[in-house]
Image 1 (cartoon, rainbow, N blue to C red):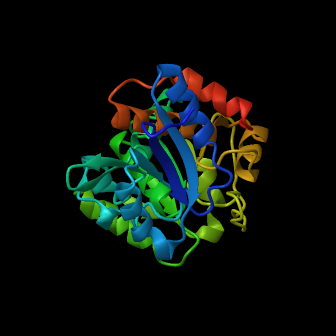
Image 2: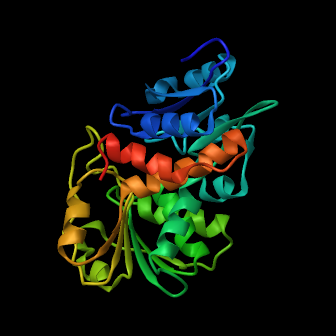
Length: 279
């Protein structure tokens, strides 16, 4: 039961009504006996700064930041961890003496999950998207020693992200190759890993991915959870799927550790997601 001593946490973004983070984190808090509660709060882009400042003034213990705010929240942080600084996106805010400290747990979560799935040095990877999730995926794959191709829906967005990540990681020019969005099938079938870092299939976000070509044995990672068209296509064509639910649990466990300074009960978090609509 919540009281005046209960510490409040939240995920902020738009949309957030679909989020399984409250079920996951509240189950984790209960499992370790922590007096905390976690809620989902819709925040429009124009209200982001006010929301972040207001949450600190109200004593929130921490925030998760999701679409579309992961990049926009960066300048609102008084401190960034090394990964967030290199990625240029933040998905976790933790209290700091002077404001909010920003962290990126998406990137290490993706790195760990893809490593577990057999992706490693010299693997060939295709990342779809150019937002905060794509930034994290590119960082993760480059940190693993993979060869990265990038395709984005918005004209020029992929090239700009490639330039920014090349500078941030001090890579040689051309280290991240971009691929035309409407002609990714030839690149997809050659990839050892394909990452869907777009918002296609997320809440009210519409649109569809271009046609992909698959081969058996590939690894597909989907940031969006639920039975998306990307996930279904990957499964039907023999790819090993890393689900959005798995990404959610792994990044959420890292956030839990940042906020509470203790190891998260990942098994409890995964079961909570299964009970509340996950696979």
